[in-house]
Length: 207
Image (cartoon, rainbow, N blue to C red; front, side, top):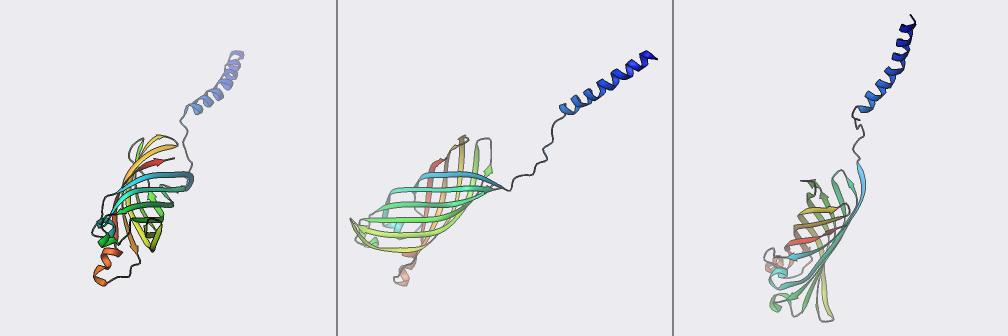
């Protein structure tokens, strides 16, 4: 009887410890819900090359000399993110008969963009995007300005990111920009001066 009592006492002390070890060995199940919103500050700095986009005064009478952009976002909602941006472009006038007797054309585009991140690998993702904003087209001859044309702008684009580390990415892409500046001219020339479309190749960094 004494031996039976000792065995029962040993079992009583060993079984709870064994059960605890077994529970600890089991994989933990993540029951947390996916976060709706995540604060994730990103700044994009990029250079872009306009390569034409139709029969309009910017493409037919100007040659790009400088094209830079910067944009950012502060948070993501699932894989959607949005933020403001600005692009600045300068052109050398190559046809005064079409563009007027000026030396330089300047285009400023201030926009709000909306993007969606699609991971396609450990380090690569693609980002389709749309943007809408304000455009300002101006011309000058040395230090003299010859007026401005204000209007609205639209963008359809696709970027591809390559992540080097948590806080640094390279990206490249293509954007199709459509500008609609206010123009007062003969009806037969309206499309040439008012519907300015451009295809831009983009390369830059995200930090």
